[in-house]
Length: 263
Image 1 (spheres, one colour):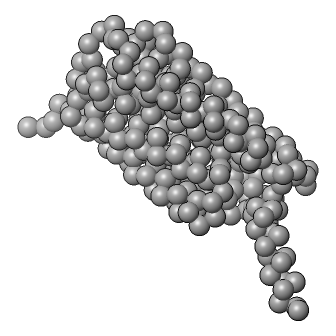
Image 2 (cartoon, one colour):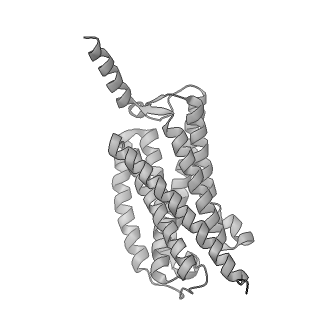
Image 3 (cartoon, one colour):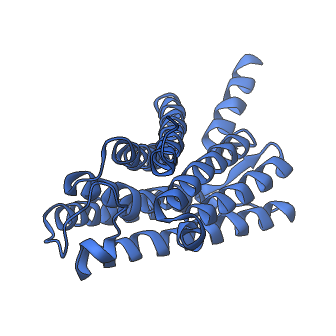
């Protein structure tokens, strides 16, 4: 007997979510490795963000494979809709605004993340979560968790997109791709940096497109596809952009070594 269409669809959604989890995990390990080696704060922010993406993807993978329940949905909603984009945007703020601005925003973000975690994990539910149906925040939660999701994803996404496009425009004009002199970076390849920034903006837009596709593909399929595609594009954009610049401190260290060798 051939599998029913519903089982086949669930299997495909599970496979897409599984691939998104693997990509996000690889992204997390890559940024974590760079942070351990260089201790750049924006790479730590990206590591936290991609760990949250991996957690959200894993929750979707689990739910599509075994069925939804309220605990899995709370974790999925928290990591996949409330926290992840905010921490991703913190990396953009570190790169564009420098460490002083980034540290201030990080202090607020740690506090806000703790508050949002408490709200989402204990928020009362309006309806039961059906194991075979993709739940939404509007159906399950009241106002507070949904406000955190709207603010925690909408504003940071705008920061990432505008910051990436502005940085790409600055690079194309051969100017510092940061807002602060203290955040100045030495551009090795202007074309790669501009292209990487554009890919990061596109990846963020794709991650926000699940609602647009939901009417055609269904909410669970739309979320699985945009999650996988968005994380892939972000990962590629990160690899392209990160190999096109070096931090100012790294440049000073190279100059010091060069001068020391001539003594």
